[in-house]
Length: 455
Ligand code: UDP
Image (cartoon, rainbow, N blue to C red; front, side, top):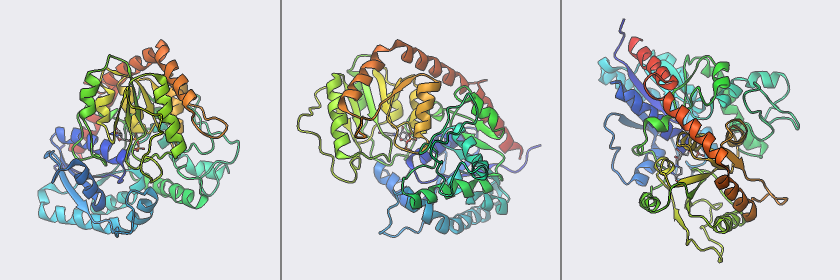
């Protein structure tokens, strides 16, 4: 029997890798005739608008709202540490006020469901109080979610210390089918500074208490990519890869201004010939490492499309080594990544292995050269290289640098290894099937939508 008219209110953690996939999900929900309100923290909202150079989002199937986040001009809203510390203090009351306002002004369209990720798990408490259903949205792999739910046990067994790091030599394995985790490779391992590391660990640790309130965890993955992890978590509902459901660019969800001139440049390149190089929204380089990458790309003798964000080099302006010429390459500050990866000219993805980039590369059948920095990126690399066998890792030299020669050699190996490309195409096909009528992710999304209507 039909309940109240569904109205979903979704609140992303203000990071690039969170806003974009949640918007992709919301568009799918809205396509099924459900009202969706998307709520951004104010500072991020301004950043998104200025990057997209629009006055407001063009997608009118979704109502956009903002809530004050309490940042002063001294705060850096790009710093995840600041976000994790500040937002739980300022946002809960502002969000509660917003929901009350919506419910009072439109009694026939009261919020019935709140979607949030574990970094904002306090939202589940608000959902409870306001009679809305709390639903989790998980942006990394399902394996990372399984590990996160495992935190109490790991603490109890003494494998994790109070800062959330693994004791030396400890390896965590949840199943033979899922790559294991080692020190500094945990989803919350963002910093080697124990004080900062503790804050990053506190968020999921606290989050899983509230997380038990959510009956559903919508995950940007699919059963075919992570069968074992899906089995470990009965309330995880894989509904991705979401980039396949929404392949165009996603409204105002870019943190940087997108340069789509590279698509025309890609049109001039032969199929499977270009190395695409991108490190997501947060990774930073030392000047020495940037030099090595630039010279490695040049040494490879291949055409490359390289995303060099203005803040890529530790806060300093980007300076290329004098001997570097971009003859065969093109550099942009921010690319329409999903469209780039689906372009036939792309032959290899040099990636930091953030989960969105991982699923975007996988869903487009592109072999990877893995360049992880922190957190879950190392585990994603293991999925790519060990489990799915669609990529290679770049090793460090004895000085902790990924050298130009190593970069060139690994690029050569990717292009000469047909097996990697074959495996990547198989995985692309499986992902493609999962999101269309009757596929595993399609069925899961339908199950969720039906539930929203029945509630
Ligand atoms: N992205 C993009 N253009 C770029 C680089 C990245 O649109 O030039 C997008 C990418 O497609 C992905 C997101 O930014 O959806 C990055 O998310 P990911 O989880 O890969 O990495 P994070 O930025 O969270 O480290």
